[in-house]
Length: 168
Image (cartoon, rainbow, N blue to C red; front, side, top):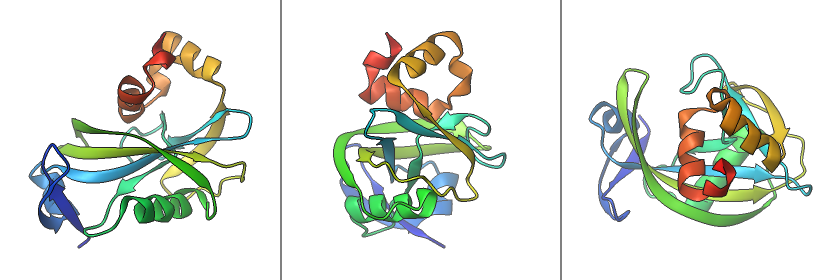
């Protein structure tokens, strides 16, 4: 039973509970996300495995719940290591926003905390992803326009909130 902090819309901690209860009761809780960029400016995106939300679609390569009492940076480092095998990397804070959606038969209510990670390390994927691919910004723009279904809803929300220029 992994505990998470329940927060208000201003990211102030109200209480803590299990991740399962937070999902079951649609309680707002923190999730760390990161877009990974390489030295050529390309974006690394992962294709989600079949049993994950946004299955078969490309999403942000780093994402996971922040444990109760865990700092954003520690969560970012933990998730980057778990999901991509990244250990040492530069990062930059981007934005915080709320993402509330119905998925996998539950109403998820996440307080997204978005960072960018800069790394040229070849990723080592875990079981959550079936593959990964680098995209140029032009490729992302073109696919968002002509084939938006290749990206998961969570990635569309990231673009809408933090990178709206990619939709132009």
